[in-house]
Image (cartoon, rainbow, N blue to C red; front, top):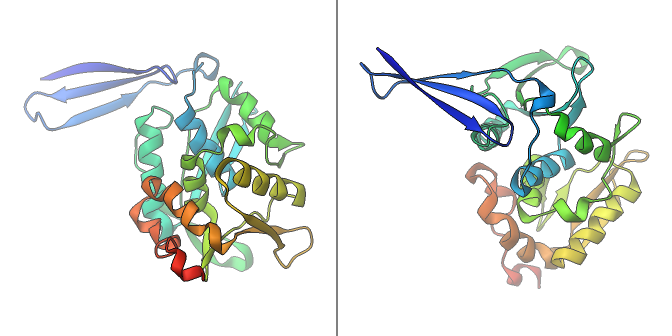
Length: 248
């Protein structure tokens, strides 16, 4: 015999029916009903927007759907970062923004015929996220939005660091290659204004590509800011860089 509960995630107006098997009470069967994008109206709280903003600074991208009336976000990582992406999926799915089915590693053919192993998932499509796409894209090219100061929270910076940060000696580098110099400079200004984190913009070694380095004396500030938001498998990027004695 099956009983069922209906769970409504108000952020997206997604109805999830949870079937409870009375013969096997520990077993649950989930069914997510499809809702048209124009009926997914929000509101979207600061945490989910921080996650979206942090990931858009990294490898994720937003898509304004041609066949629908809304925008969705897509997240992907190489298979060696599987634990991070599954953690990210769990947070986003718990908030009702994507299918709860855990993503799996898939293979694809990359440049030069090389086989790549990636893991990816998408959010549901929301008409109430069209503004997000418009903030982040101009003529289909990603840019740092003018309201980045509002949403560059500690959670957003942690997501950005896990997504696109690289440990570089006694400091951290964000791979901002996809952004213009002006965009990168804006990010450094906001980081200093909000958190007193000092950064420099450097050439990435290719024309019109730039990266951001955190100055060594600001690493303890960054560490304290993001450590509580980071998944354990990604802590290696900042671990051991919170001791001021390292920078004397």
